Image 1 (tube, rainbow, N blue to C red):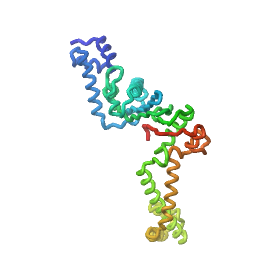
Image 2: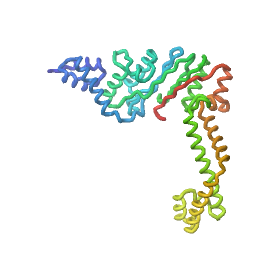
Image 3: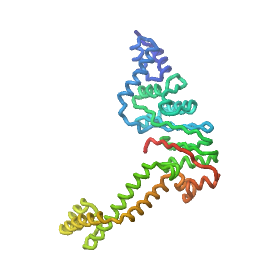
Length: 331
């Protein structure tokens, strides 16, 4: 059966697929447009399955806010070239539009929402995978419903953004500034009180181990220095070898340094002052919470000395952040 250029063009207009894909689908379908469309969709699913294990580190983050409702969605792909393509941008914008219109509860619910052309979000993503030959995936979707929702998408690359919920309306500039704070400073929670217990427990564990290592290292350095050896030449076993080869340590000094490290480390580890270790670790945990909880962070869009919480209170004493979502393709 002869497939005319007009037939191919018609199917291309209907599906958006490439010319050769349309021609091959029409040949296989013996000119049946409905079957040809199914073949193109099936091809998209096949390509998606073949590329399922690929990384989607490129893509775009889009946000929509309508009244007190806000959504943030991220569509991923494999290369920056594809992410800048107009078809990719049209798709992710369409997904964002249908997300704010339907306000689905989660990502799975978003996938079955229908776009203007009648395809579900999941079908459209699969179709685009087939057309581009690159894996496309819905990386993230979150929603907020609050009296006021602020937003910010990093405009340089469009690959990270945030939505922030407030308990009441705030000036647009302040809302945007707090959203920018979330994007740039990556807080783990709104406040110290709602920081996940597992996060604090892990930071405390790291702080204790780091403090112990520092106390042991101080004792070792003092002992090495007392022996007349430069501690900086003995901070690691590899450095002892390299500094011996350079002539900065004699073989005898290298041997002595290793013996000091072994002996003093064991002695100090067995006699560490527990209360001091806990006090230093507590200080480190508090520092972590100040730097990584939104309210306690220094507000980056201000003078850099006032906390986010105090900045908001200065504008409206009753205003506060109640939730936020940050989405990034790069971290």
